[in-house]
Image (cartoon, rainbow over all chains, first blue to last red; front, side, top):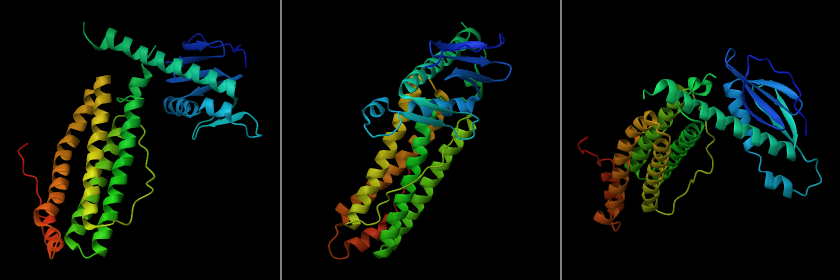
Length: 121
Length: 176
């Protein structure tokens, strides 16, 4: 596992953090920065959705029970995206936790916007 | 913090996924009807073949309607892979039994999407789905009526020829 030590611009808003990684949103660029597995990667809306789907698709139980003599590493490659990840099972679990939390917070942000600005009291 | 997700898409990721599944179901449906048209044509049921050709076209139109809606709402529409299309049927009646089952599957599937939309208060998609519910009224009616011809006319003697003659005459004329 990696410790997150990257210095992030103050113009970014923190969306969600765990001890293994952080996700920040840039309102100016309409994108997200994901600080995970030793690098900070920029994701636009489409790529973030694809990343979430790709990481969520790993069945951790199957990976743990797999006794084939192969390296316990999985490649997360997203079409039309600049980044890819090579992750261990522990990192996949950590990444799933980070992305689940991120989407929950983004959904919560949408609800807050609805209540404060879009739906009159 | 800006609500980027909502700015990019009107529909949620879950609804988008269900709509994409429906695109696949409609494509599958269209292919099955084409297969039924082929079987009917091979076995001399020309009118039924025409009926299923038309049904195949309708399902394709439904598929494109869902596909375009996903795109219009800011989602990602996925072109589906269609596999395992049955090519042989045991009897003329079985073709129509499977046609009805096909329509029931589609209706149930759209109801499932609507249930999710209600949960999310996605009334925009519900309004879109209402057209399909009306359409399914007609589709299920036609499929059920076609199957009933087997009981009303009977298959003995020239019964199947008679059934084939009547299949294309089934129309749904209920008021809106």
